[in-house]
Image 1 (cartoon, rainbow, N blue to C red):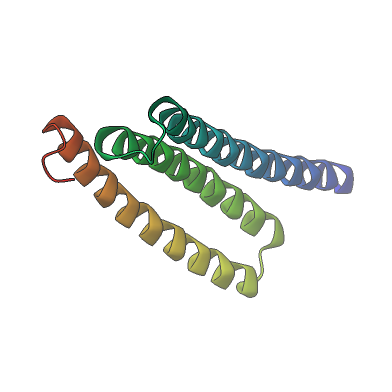
Image 2 (image 1 turned 30 degrees about the vertical axis):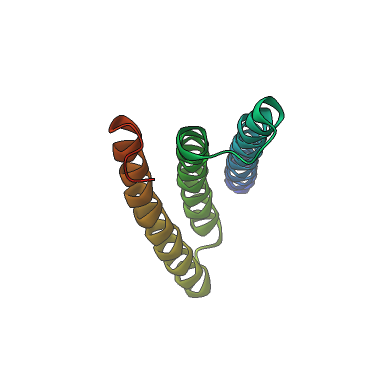
Length: 124
């Protein structure tokens, strides 16, 4: 039975690390895409991006951040399953609360940016 428990624990540890890695890749990809969108606009127009393209780039980056936050919450839950201590549970609760609050505020901001984008940027 000990062999199975060790196998299970190691598998969950690797799964949690892989999920964290995926979250990091999502963040990196989003940041690179944001930089390309903004950088392309600066190169094309020779000035700082304004209005629509900047709003579009922010919405895109925000989507990547939200996706990564969801992956990180899953990884935290897996780590808590592995460690099963009260301290880990407190840390999970704190991290989940912070990440949920970030997600909530970011979702609100993205909703407003999308609304502005669909209205033609009237509220820039």
